Length: 484
Image (cartoon, rainbow, N blue to C red; front, side, top):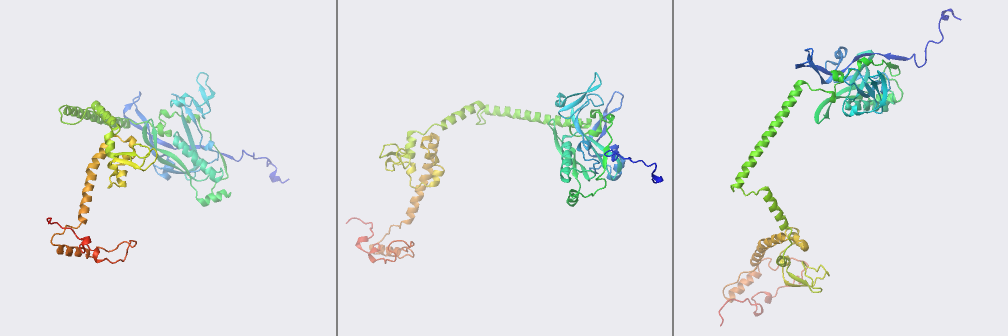
């Protein structure tokens, strides 16, 4: 045996224990600040302080030297893979005391029995969660290699949105790299998010966690390569000191977020002033509306307006509705459809076919509006559309149709007569020879007898002399004269 190794022990390391390194907590990063009230004081005469949320991380001096006084992003890594270690979460109830009295996971809880001083198990949640006395709390634990590598930093939070987003960021990263997120670079951000609490819309700055590696680095990690120092190390984190778990309602600015946020005195005054201004505006509008209504009522009573009171207007509207539902009278039906019966079954017909036996051989005693030759399809798509449903034709609709017929269709008849008159040659005056000459000129006008339709009968047939009006006794043009 070599003398140099006489005192060397054989077993100097314990498997699974000697490789573990414990990291102490070296600082906390906060999400808000404390501000002092300008008017309110406590019993000792000191100004009352309020916690106020910030849109940046409130960091220790060593972090400010690197990231500035108001950083909104931090580069972090996790010393262990276990999410329950780096991001523990639970329901917590503090009561009115400084220290924690109960903590649970939504199924089971441990609560302090103040009579015995012992912690007892019970079910979770309870009515304390429903009335807002108990709340979810979480702590994010991480390292910042660019600042210090001798320990971990911690952020305490209570935001529902932050807890969900951080859990999502951790699980997404673990799914990508196969659960091994130790010493992989992450970015922790404060992101504005609109939240609603007790009917109030607010903007809060929640936390989001993003894996900060490229696609090429991700591929190498998935292949088992070691890219970042410390990826294969094993650490433990120093257990939290129970005395550090302080009731947030006592002004702990570390966990300010969402509904933990308390309004400052100035914010309360501003909100109350805004509410009072809105209330005054509504009251003014109501009084103005009331005055306008009273003035209008006086003018109606004086006969200055043709406006009916509400009850009278309702009665008129109801009467009008009932009037509009009255079916057309027999005389209205005859004017519109005419007096028509089916020759086969004797049924009254409202149209061009018997609705009972589908017979089209009808006997018309008197024609109605719908028999008017100048009607077209557009008329039945518009004004005459109600006539397509004779059993539902109302008296009001019938009156409208009759009025329309008397104005529009009569005008059409006049226009038709005018067009027909314009196409008829004027009566020729003069002697028989002059009339024949004029008739000959009419016949000889360009295009007068030109055949337009190639399919017309007798194409190319020459016009004989006797075909010309006035050229023979058979087609002589009559003329006005005294009987001889």
